[in-house]
Each structure stands twice: as C-alpha cells, then as structure tokens.
Image 1 (cartoon, rainbow, N blue to C red):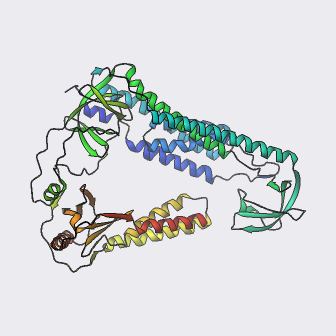
Image 2 (image 1 turned 90 degrees about the horizontal axis):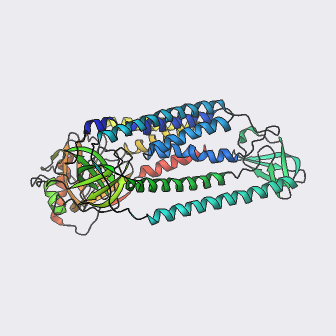
Image 3 (image 1 turned 60 degrees about the vertical axis):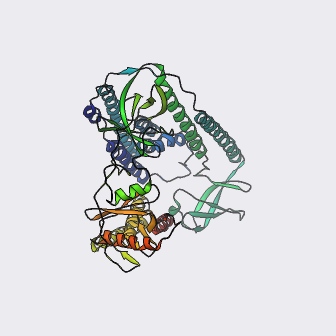
Length: 537
C-alpha cells in the first residue's frame, strides 16, 4: 500500500457537514427573512423607488450563496456570502438587512478560514507519497462550449437591458406628469387608475394595500405609455439574469482550470480499494475504512459483480442460499488535492481513467452487498386479498397534528403575508400528513403497492425477490436491479409473512411480462394545491 495515511486524523480534520448545509444555509434563510420583513419607507414622489442596477447584480451572489453551500462549493459559497454582505452594507439603506447579512457574512468568513485550515490538515494527513501525473488531458470540449454560450447569453441580456432602459428614458423625457385617480383595485395587487383624459392604466405597485379607491396618484404619461412617478419601471432583472449566466460560466472555467492544475507539478497520491455503490459512483476505502466517494461518467469496470444474476440475488435475499464470497476489491491510485471538495485523478496501471471531486461518505444502504440487513422472512400467513396495511393510531395522530399545523400556517399567512417561510413549513406538513392517512402497503392478486412520501410503486409479485425484517421495519427487494425499499414502522407484526404468502400464491399462477411501475404519490398533488393556496392568500 502507498502511504501511510492517518485515516482517523484525515476524517477528524474535516469541517462537519452541518456547519455549511445547516448552519450557514439556515443563517442565510433567517437573514433573508429579516431583510424582507423589515419595515421599509413607502415609495413617494419625493422619495421614489428607483431601479438600482448595481443591487440587481448583487442579487447574483445573494442567491448563489446557499446554492453553492448546498452543493459543496464551500469556499466559493462563503466568498459570495461575504461579498453580498459588503455590497448590502453599501447599497441597502435598511439597518435590519445590513445587520442580518453582515452577521451572515462574518459567519461565512469564519467558516472559510476554518475550511482552509481543515483542508491543509487533511492534505498533511494524506501521507507523503508524491507522484507526477502522465499525459496532460484534453480540454473538455462540451464544458468550453457551454461556458462560451453562457457568456454570449449574458452579453445579449446586457444588450437587451441597455436597449430597454434607453427606450424607458426616452419615454420619461417626452412624458408629462399628471395626477390620476384610483378607480379600482383587482385581485388585491392590481391598481387601476384613470387619467384626466379618461385613459385607464393598470399598475402592480410594491405596496398595493396602501392604495384606496379615490386616491390621487402622480403618473408619467407619454401617449399610451403610462407609468407611476413614484415607482419607475424596473428592468434591471435583465442584469440579474445576465450576471448569473456569466458567473456560472466563470465557475465552469475555474473548475476546469483546477482540474488541469493537477498536471502542473507533483501531487499527493494514495492507493485505495474501490467499491461500486451506484451506476456512476464509487466508494474509496483504505484498510477497510471509508475515505470518500467519487462520481465519474467513466465506467471503470474494475469490480466484478457479486451476483451472477438477479435470480441468485433473490435466493440469497430470501435466505435460500448463503451470500457468495466477496473477492478482494480492485485497487486504484487516487492523486490530487486530498481534501473534501478536492480535484483528483484516478489511475489504473499508470493510466488516468477518470478525474473527479472527493466527496464525503454518506451513510446509505448499499444494494447487492455481501452484508444483508435484518433477517429473511420465510414463513407465510394466509390473508384475504386484496388487503391493506394501514398506519397505527400514533401515525394517524401525527397526521392530524400536521394537518392542524398546515391549517395554522395558512391562517397566519392571511394576517402576516410577509412570513412566507410559514408557507414552506405548511407544505412540508401537508406532504407528511397525507402519507399518514394512506395505506403503507396494499396487497392484491397481482402485485404489492408501496406508498412512499413522493412516489407510489406497483411491484408485480414475480418482480418481488423477497422480504427481510429489521425490528418493526421491512425491507423489500424488487426489480431487475434489486432495488430495496424500507417501510416505516409497521403496526402489523405479520405484514412480512402476509407478503410472502401472497407472493408464493401468485407465483403459482404465473404473470409473465409485468414490470415495476412508479408514479407520483397523491401527496405531491395535494402539496401543489396547498402551495397554490399559499400563493393566492
């Protein structure tokens, strides 16, 4: 083995995942909420709400911050958080927003410093083996084309903004200022006014609730072009779109530059065992300890399948055969930036087969491994079909509480529409509540139906490999790839036996050619209806 590698120190040096994905992202949500809900001075003729092109560009780092943090780009996400905190301090007159995003920027700076130190410690703990990578890789043509197209798109949006803004300024130069009367308010947000020449126009002001029928509103009129004097037309959103496109292009270019930087000098390397844990995802292990995962588009083809076919897997899953002896995993040389988020190259027999990013190891169930969870359910208990297994009283009580919470969120939104976060909480409550009033499993003569939070699976009995039990939960393996679903806690202790009996009964009749199907759960539709209610309140 190339090394030695201090695995325990390497793992301990990492910044905990929740610091960025919970702490910083949650802090951003709180800061955004306080900034939006802060009381602002209304738009008046003396102090109109003028478009701010620079602040529209600042929206790019504002929105990029949580997205980058969620997708593991910690240093870039923290940099965007600090940048927006500084820009908000210069451009935003709201003291509440300045304080909220200033504190978040400070937290981002601290986490960024912690991450830099963490990566240095991880790199030091990754051993002392140094190698030089062979054969500079070719340019990734697709990424270059995408980056160029994004820059071109951004340029066109800037041109569109310039043309539109010039047209607006021309109208303002030619317009006359008149007082219009509010004659109607539609849908609580659309204000209709009538000019002295009987011409009518509709506006959607920032604070429609502050207008009443009969109020006089100063407007700028240039023929059929009519705009409010205290809220000039704002088309700076073109700048936000263009800025986002250019920023994304820069991100792609920077990522490619980091990848190619691996070939500029010697880099650290570790020889590791690999385990396939997904179609394009591999687990890296050192001395039987999990190190990191890689996602690669290349099929390395280094690991022999544990099972010869799905039928063999089914027999092992049902406990009819012992699991096959797993061969020693293949080994690869992984060289590059040895820290979470680092760019690395994978070498097999001295040749580079893939480049990727080191990701954290997630605890997840690995299908088709030699370790099988729980115990197989072998016995059968007769049951009259069709048969449904419903949630117990506890889950139904939880469902009632969640529905009350969702209703309470709607009522609160009616009186406090600025608390939009309540709508998001209510949607989650509705999604969780619906699943607590649905059957957990439904058995019929041809299939078993599995209800999850988002999807509903219909599994023909011939496609069900078997059932294993772990405490009050069942694990069902099905389909040509041996997919596994774990049920919630089932109140029926004989649910597994009923499943196996129905499966054995159906296999006698034989129903060839049927496939596993998946569709959206009804909870998604109900959640969408609730979301629509949130928007219209």
